[in-house]
Length: 509
Image (cartoon, rainbow, N blue to C red; front, side, top):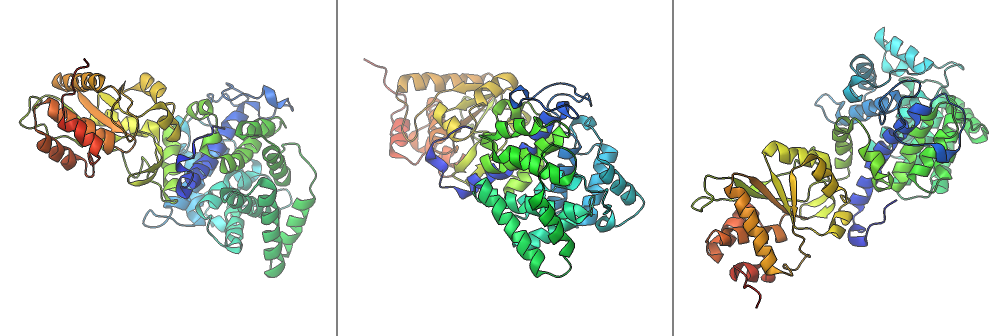
């Protein structure tokens, strides 16, 4: 897990965003780690690797299976299943989305993910095909206690994290019934959801589980008609098996123990896969728990970036994160505010604009951000940006959880041009800074499109934009006016204004 400075530790929004995104990506990554090992024998955890190719399903490395796909289908339904495309808890919509994934590969990278649900889910989908109501689709017999509903119920806890316990328990029961109607499955889903909510709130695993079990016990004892669920909860409490098998109680405890005894996210997933048997599901369940505890930051960078299908999952994760109040790349696309170059020597050549740090995940001038680097870079490409003139220092990249930006941009562009300036100060070497500004102007004169960026796109970016105007011969007042017209609130600090006013900086003696 990466330790970041305390710059944004005060932001509950950013912390919650990390845990919400971490839970979904944690499940998807865990699923992808486990797929190649499914139906294998137990193995030492330190032999488990992300990105192992093939396996029994011959899936491309880094691809989730039905576990991840049905999880995304449920998340999509909870966020967009209402009649107006907004949030809703609608079982029939959940059933429709489960069938759509099966029929179209709607939640699978390139449509080539595995569709091999368990026997109980298979029967439930058949019943949905025959017109059964989603609430009645899941078989409820003693032979129908697989882990299908447990493997996909995580989004319910994330979207409905503020529900009262009794309400969340009721919804967990209903969500389980779409594919698994037995009280054992419903009770396991309820305990899992309540435990995830506890982890989102910062409880340690032992406390989160104890609270979840106690809440379920209280509700089952106090509400009529839940006697079978009370018996199922007692079975869950007393179950001793840990084989990574497909029986719901075994899956719950195998995943929970792999998570609760782990040192970090990767350890939790490796421990889950090490059981053997139904490795993708065990690792998906444990990965969701681990992501909720350690957050998005806890998932190894190469595991996250090695996942296929990020473009499928990112908009759904963004929709979830937005419920915490964070701005995302999907709902708030990266904006580049163009400078007015009319009447200058650059009029009719290229373009120059101001933006902020792509992919940042922290508080900013416009609130808390939880952005996706790949989506933001795709926006820059779409706008025609040739180069990003970046003014942030390396430690700021770490603060903003985007330390990989230089490597990613080197691989996929746009070109990255860096001139780090310590915030809130002005350049330590004004002459070198002027050379960098002249180079920026030359790029634009040659027809390029340069986006100037710092963390928030206000102070250092505004200073640089004003210096571009001064280099083009505009006076101080006009340079500031045009900069502020493009980017409201910029170039207000005295030191920045002094640098712009004294442009060009004197050569050293």
